[in-house]
Length: 69
Image (cartoon, rainbow, N blue to C red):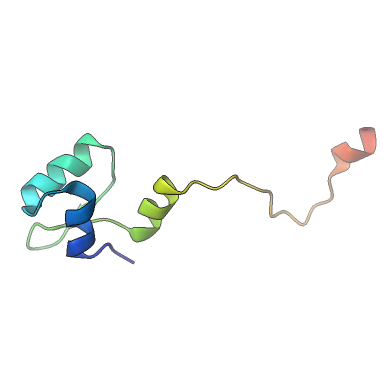
């Protein structure tokens, strides 16, 4: 779900929440903040950003364009 505090330190190289938030903003990472002001980053976003996969169609529709080839 969310990155752990240790993972955020590893990602940003900062321990202070305010510095982590600044780094995340400067590098275009979307995040929310907890009631205590700590950044919350979705692990799935990080994985998607660092390991992009080629998009493939998961459609069950036939490829009608293949008939014209």
